Image (cartoon, rainbow, N blue to C red; front, side, top):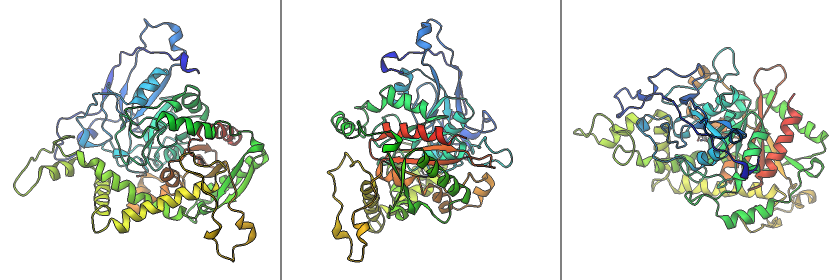
Length: 509
Ligand code: GLN
């Protein structure tokens, strides 16, 4: 697909939307009142696009169906982030990424269900109710979150490609749980203009599809990865893009010239034995294909999850302050009664329990009494996580001055072998999730921290802003696949997708 060959599909959409109310009812059950579109509850609004027949046949050449996560602005249907506080919200403009994809032939088929404002790992914290995983025939299981609706739309073939957002794993985790491919680009590569922020320093927009190739075509071959968006202050500026491109453009992809690292710290006790086995098997398959497989150490991995769950809620608490019923968002019905404030009424009724928890957490960790112990410490851990990655990748991080391996960090007892520095790798391979998707009933018995543990393998790449992709791998004797994650150096997305494409082919059956 070439950028010059983009086509335009004329749409006269028929829109179906689940609930658009003016105020939050006391029950707080506003947008969940209508019946779901399917038993998997993955769409929150649907479009029935009719192709404008006046357009020439040739313009349909590259048409594809696209599902859009409900925190990405569209003008034809509401954008509610699965939250009652945005029950009446309709965006006056469309997200850049949606416009870019429409120019490449996308026909939007609907908006997908998600965890409210992207906060969650199972797409259960939604004003529309939980998304269900189509892969499980018995007890309903988690579809992963927060882009669970997008993953299910792709899995069921309702859309060829789906847009999701990934702050700490929200594309990769649902991809792993539903047997689809989920790609999170380097931070700042794809435009976030028109995407409702959760945690600005971590948020990325990415894609889900059945195969890596569909994502590769759109992101690399049509030049999407190269488009700077002046409307998005976090979109990498053109000059920096050029520098990053130069650093990564000529790196090899032939298997015999690749080294893949197996991060030892990811082999945690909680890892399901079948997933561990798939990981081992995959490394030997990759080895047989000529790739050099080496163990590597990322010592700060253990602290990454804690750091993430301090930083993300802190940013969220500040981002979500605008939903007060005055500046933004639906207003609570109670109004400003004696002894109550308008804000608490509005925010109490409009936000779900998990979002409220994050706001409280974030407000606390940013408070003057706690900031030094929590927020500042977490920022330091984030630097260490980034440093761990930079130490093991062959190619230097194009954003920073190259750092030399520092022998002074080591004491005299370090064996000579280790003093040569860590193995230098092109990519890292690890599981995407520590377990298979839990049943929705199991989730009811889990506390918040139990669910946060699902993100243990996805948050490190998010903290470092690195590109990562989850590829589905069948598991012998199980109807549920596992997801394997490949992580690359910053801006090495082209190669990451190319290698992931090979890996998906090799591990398919
Ligand atoms: N599960 C993580 C969280 O709740 C990640 C969510 C995301 O990537 N949007 O913060």
